[in-house]
Image 1 (tube, rainbow, N blue to C red):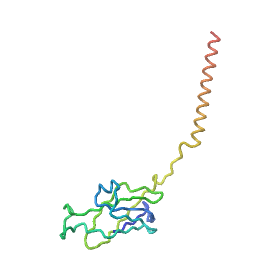
Image 2 (cartoon, one colour):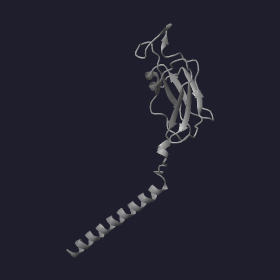
Image 3 (cartoon, rainbow, N blue to C red):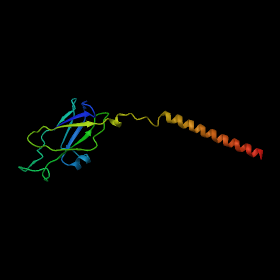
Image 4 (tube, helix red, strand yellow):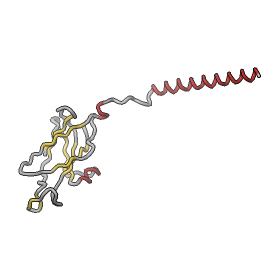
Amino acid sequence: MTIHKVAQGSNKNLADATFGIYLTEEAALAGGTPIQEQTTGADGVATFTGLRYSGFANGTTVVDTAADYQWYWIAELKSPDGYELLAKPIQVDVTGTDTDIDLTVENVPSNGGFSLPLTGGTGTVVLSAAGALLLAGAVLLVVRHRRREVVED
């Protein structure tokens, strides 16, 4: 099974994405130990070998609704820098006499490709100080106004 990792909306190969193959969806979602683990190279490709045919168990052919039919789940364990992990595992099966299954997986850039503003930096300190000065000025005006009213009475 060959996985080709590319950036969303382009054919840019993505290296350093690590995938794991699991026998059950529950194991893939739980992040347990995969039966195989591969990392994409500079060409964005990771190859898994030695998987049994999904439709062949105990010396006989089985249909995809049978309990012995082997589905596999591919989970992304580590995404390339600047990209998000896949949200859920991908279900695949190994069928027929052709052992090559090509699967292209697109990755979304982190934060949807947008840079988020820095919060809590020096800008907020300046704004907080300005707000405190305005509040102190308002309190001072109220106190002066009340003193004038007391003196006039």
